[in-house]
Length: 208
Image (cartoon, rainbow, N blue to C red; front, side, top):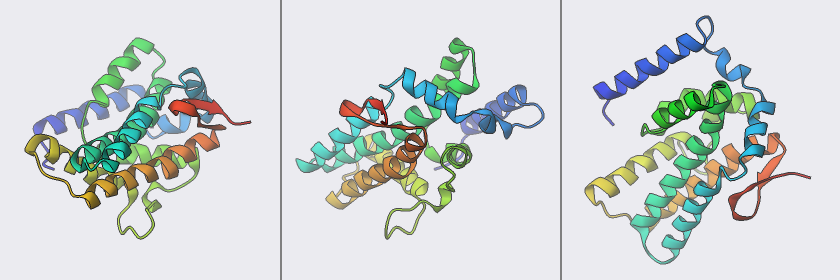
């Protein structure tokens, strides 16, 4: 994907916001976001994973009925929702205490396409919350990091939507497999460390 002037403008905006919020040590932003605060967000918003789970189930149903292109689109959307809306959104809300400002930042930041834009933030966040280096996560027999595979599935999703590209059964299944591992290896690991798990309908529940 090409790096456009709009991308550069957003990057500068993020850097500026980081400098304003943390003028001396912007890396402390994630370190200051404690597990307790993240857990509190999830407990207060147990429905946060519902859209992602719904998209994932739709992807599997479409694949089972032979609608491979549509299955790929929903699988890519599920992956994006798992990482951005279900993980990054709670972090933004925790870092910015003014709820109205937080919603504006979330809406602006998470509207940007491309998962690799968030790679550094996700890596730091995952290390803090799960104690695991995100770059080491791979599916079995996969030669690429899981986050890179996720980004490539997103790019394929975009060509399906905007160029009408056909998707094979194998490509659609790949998208579903990647989405499955994003939940199992990334989000479920974070939730488990917070004493939470996925319940009926995609709602979060407290582990006994």
